[in-house]
Image (spheres, rainbow, N blue to C red):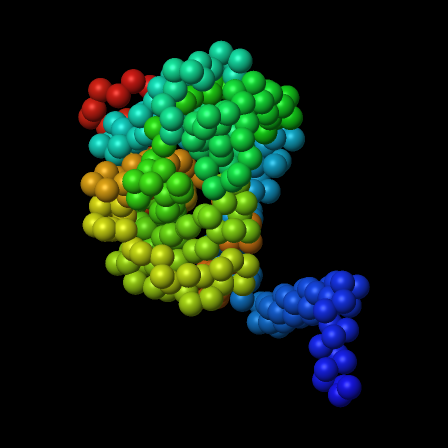
Length: 336
């Protein structure tokens, strides 16, 4: 038996296969560490990180400042301090559609499961990273989280929500709201349109497609500029998929993000929107997005410059008499 045949036979044995997979994983990790080390060496040699605008540096500074505020008991000034549904009202007042709501409850035990539509989203007013958000489909035996196989009863969902509250990962009130059915099948969640918005300027939009709710590793992205043109072919930590379609009438989404970012009164916000047929629908605002947030040196510089320009414009407007608090538009939307 030749050597290549022997290797093929032994390679199929479970212990050998596990070893080979582990070797490949370690090789990939080593390559990532080498890349990181090389970038750090370049930063130290050039000193550019000390003198040039940087989106990533500004964002990490904002995260550290918020941690210090929490330690000192200083209340947040972000628009999301009032909860997601307050921001819904703010968005609606500026002519941006929001998901229809079927009810709100201070206690998950009060949710009237039998009265809900067969497709629905249960959402907490205070949560992050998909915690406290459950896109659901009614089945004969309970509720199925969209993109997952697990079936849960209403009682199990109440227990799950209650545990999230106890763990501090979600806070009431909870709402049952419209499921945004992008393709009419009720089988998938819509593509996120994540606009990096700098007090009216929107230089970068990430289109995010997620094939499994709550699993960020299953997401893919397409990165485009304000005109809808691709700006990144690769990314160091996420999958880039340029087959994700740019939403129809993309300029409406961009303009909605621009308008809302000014109303929020912050130099930077990530504003998530959806295109559902003829509707531009608001998702949420994230003041300090998680993760590495590294888009390469050129985009990091451009976004850093956009942040600095936004900071100056906002300060100028406040000095000239503008209120620093979020401003509602001309509609009669209720607040809170």
